[in-house]
Image (cartoon, rainbow, N blue to C red; front, side, top):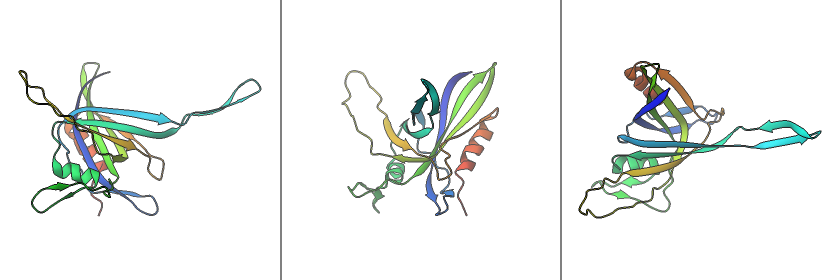
Length: 185
């Protein structure tokens, strides 16, 4: 299997009911996908008894997702970071703003035995943080700059922190991903 592409970033606002049941606001596309990195941190505990390893725990603790997009649209940025957009289109950031929980997903394009496949990777609970900004002036050569936003991956009340499914049809993969974030009635 060779990963050869990344596309179709999607996000949706998450609400968890008192019983832990998640509901989503409907899938939205933040911008075009440039890069995505997911790093997982596991609990690591080992118990030694009688001079050998007797028990171990390597379960999910939390994760970090770092996404790079081609455009930092103010409406999307405000929505995933808890900022507001004024009536005249100005994004206002306040120190009291709280980023909401969101779901985040993407599609990886792969080749397996000379056949294209599309793997959906879905993170049902993420909280993004304000990105750092780095800008430079245009010199003799134009250099493209993109926006990278980092978030913390958490688990839902039932313990779910990720879902994946692979398809042979890209349209089916997109439908599946958007279905995971379908607006709850």
